[in-house]
Length: 260
Image 1: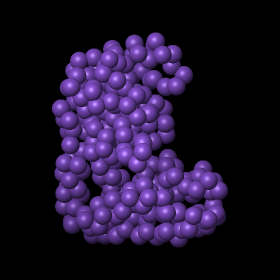
Image 2: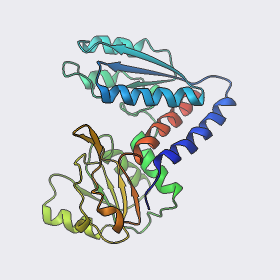
Image 3: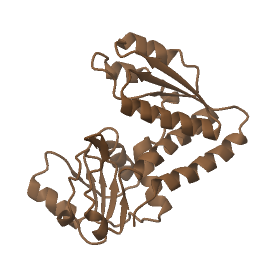
Image 4: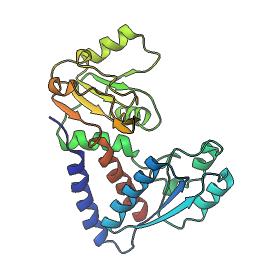
């Protein structure tokens, strides 16, 4: 079964639109974009379009590629909005850790500075599993990668739910990696390594959640090779799987920030 992430996004979009129509205050989101990276511009455009549809005031601050760290921090501090997002990546001359540390935690809807919200990618992962009634109890779960956007937030949720899991990363010996993957009932991957997971590395009926989107030759690719689709019982494709839902979770967080 191939998951339709766009459909789930649309369902959440209508739910949020209905909730916002009943709000006394219009939620607002400030987005800081530095430079003219096409991928970043596209992501910002998608967020802006989603927000405006559901009734959110979206404010965009665009800074030139040559901007320094202090200027980005100033842009963040100038935003009088319920939520603040800094679009990553930032140009090399900017100290990313300093910038992100200046996002107020109560406005950190993208959870880049430890905001008290669902990390959007991890939130999307568990949203899609919940909406398709995938039971994770007593399952062999493998998380591929320990990055700050996918692996680590997913692991935090698994810990909170007292679910057992194994982690596969670059330090995992190849033999052990293959053993864990082929025995897994559920694989959640965010390695960012196109087509890394092949058909002979998974068992029949596995649940595959691919959150490892990366760009290759101008095309968005996932960690899971398409040959795996036949053997799996459940797959989130790239593109069109986790990505659209991630945007919806960010706006769920914004509504929470507004209500707080």
